[in-house]
Every structure is written in structure tokens, then in C-alpha cells.
Length: 97
Length: 394
Image 1 (spheres, rainbow over the protein chains, first blue to last red):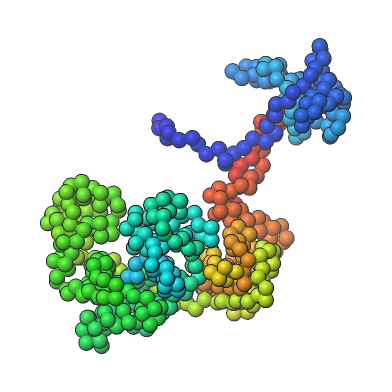
Image 2 (image 1 turned 90 degrees about the vertical axis):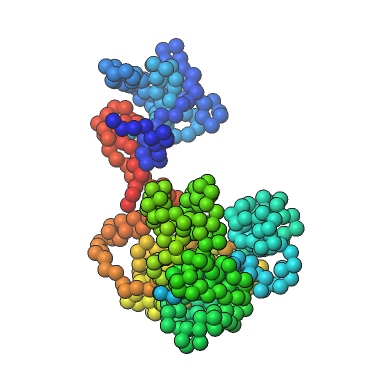
């Protein structure tokens, strides 16, 4: 059995890519984003493509259930955001492979 | 082997007082940088006021408010010390410069030439004085430790000879703190009530070994004046050096890099066929003091490109604290050129440059801030599970 070293492991050596970032979003009754807060400013968004859903790992202790949206804010480049159906939070995340 | 230990205690302070004798009137602290944060060295008077090396300047001035703080001049200290070692090298071919202010000299067979070891000690003191203007205390004995202890016990400008066979008698009344062992071992000796080396020598080898393990054997030997540590003579290799005096002081780092590259290009023809293991940059600051930065390479370097890269890194990461009047570049530890399997294509060259950059970053920060992307589950629909960034070890 490996003994506990009593120290925090060095986390510098491995990092995740495309980590989601929390975003403040106002959505319609049916869950489609209407506007979001970018750099402290509220901006209306336009839906660029049909939303898609990910429902994965429901067989595990930490399932993943997200609704993704590709949107274009008034000022700035398009971005991908998702609504976490389990926590109710909105996140921004790079999605492309 | 008969050994002489040359001791110039508080070497940086001694050099500063030699340069400005008026500093001797007050307690003196030599800081660690142009805007000093810590104590590099302090005079006896400052030491008596509980100033210690390594403490912050603020703490030191709290202990000794009347002390004068001066910035260091590493170039001058090194020059003085090198001149002392060179002069000692004229007396004996084997000289070990342990650290600035401490040197061991192999004097076996020299006593006949100088009519005894007492006269030889006087000769060494005179040699150091002529070479540097500084006074040294000298200890002569068999083995390094007893020579060191003898020098520690003698006054500045005096020598002390410990005759063969009388080492343990000489060491007996001395304090255990002189023993060159771990501070923890000294503390434990004191806990056992052992204050003098003679008290340690009175114990048997098994008794000391049962308490201190391997260190116990060394303790027993040292307490009996037995020290078989070999003398490691300094290597004689003439470094390549080039200097440039500037018409007006230069403060910009880009300008300094350009000057350093110019100096490097001057040294290149002399370097051909050889590689350098270390690089020293020295500058004369507008304050009149010297600045020095020393880099030891992990492997000998001969390529101009790599030397330029290392030079630029050294100046960018550790720039002189203010404008410089002259710049000097020294390549040391010269050795034969080492062979490497190189790649002919451009990609190979880029790879080598990248690996070198990562090695340098890792040496500076202790870890590599460069990461490479690794596929973990590239097929996953969950973006954060597809790839991870792994620290690149080059």
C-alpha cells in the first residue's frame, strides 16, 4: 500500500485543455441564451446553429448532461457555451477538436 | 602530507577596508546586492553586535544601528583572491582555494627550503600581503583539519605550527564547534556535555559510532588529529577573456547584449576546437563598483549560436543593477570539443533550439513552463477530456 506523503502533489506537470469557464447568461423560457455578460457588459446574442445535447456517463457517479449553443455576441467573435443541466450553471468552452 | 591553511576571515569586509580604510572605524556590513536585502559579510565589530551573514539588512541595522552598509564588489573580491592564489601557486604547485579567504597549500618538502616551518609560515604571510595587501593567519600541520584549527587559533598576521605527533594535544582544549561536521552533530555533542575536542577524543570509537553512525568514525579521527581528506589543487587553465570600455555609460539591456556578442565574436577564433564549461560576465558600474554574473553550463558549449543564446539569457535574466562603463566576458573551464550527432534538416535544428530553451527555463524556474499537448480521448464528445497539457521535459 502506498503511504500518504502528507504533501500536495505537484500539479504543474499536467493541465487540462479546454477547461470550461463560468459565464453569466440570461436565457428564454425554453433555455435558449438571449444575452450574456462579457467583460462586464451585457450583450445580446444570436444563435448561429442548432443547439446540441451531450448526455454521457449517466452510468457513472458524475454524469455529464449539457446543452451546447454556438452564439455570436453583438461585439466580439462567436463562442460556444453550454448549460449544465445538473448544476444549472452556464459555461463558456472551446468545443472544436 | 604537511598542509598550510591560509585564513583571511571576513574576506569581503577586509577588501572593503583595504580600499577605504576609514570604514575600519565603524561596524561594517557588506550587502548582497547594489540595493542590498541581506548581509553578505560583516566585520568583527558588527559580529559582536549579533549581526550574522544571511540576515536581512533591516534586522542587521536593528541589531547594530551605527553600522555602515556598502554594496558588494564581487569583481574586486575575485581579483584579489585570484592574485592571492596565484602568489601561493608560486610557493607550492598544489593550492586549493576552498572559498574566498580560505586556502590549503601543500607544503610537504618546502620546510627545508625555508629553514623550518616557522619561517615558511612567515613567508606565506608575506606572500599574501605582497599579493593583496591583506593580513592572513596561517596554520601548519599534518592534515587539513588541524591546519585549519591552527590558523583559527592564531592572530591575524601570525602563523602557528603544530608538530607531527602533537595534534591531539593541540586540539584537546579547542571548542567542538571547530569540528567540520554537521551542525546537528555539534548540537548533540553539546547535549552530551562534550564542549571540547579533547572530551570527544576521550571517547572510544565504538561509543562514538554507536551514537553517530558513520559520522562517529570521522568524529573520532578528527578529534585525534587524523584527517585524510585529500587536497584538491585548483586546475590551471587560462580562461579566454575580452573586455570593452565604453565611451559613455550604457544602461539598455539590448545594447549590453550587442556588446556582449561583440566580445564573444572576438573570443571565437581563440575558442576554435575547444568548448567552454562556464561563462563569467563582469561589468564596471557607474557607481565605481563591479558587477559579476557567473554561469556554469551543464555540458561544454562550443557553438557560437548556443553561446550567444546563453549570453543573451544571462543578461536578460540577471541584468546589471545600473548603467555600465565597461563589460568583460570570460569563458572558462575550456575543454576539447565534444561530439554530437546533429540533424541535417531544419526541423532537427529547431528541435535542438527548443530543447535548449526548455533546459534553460527548467534550470531557472525549477520546472518547465513549456507544455506539450497529448491526446487522451480524442474521440470524446466532452471537450475537456480529449487532450491534456503535459510539462515538457525536453
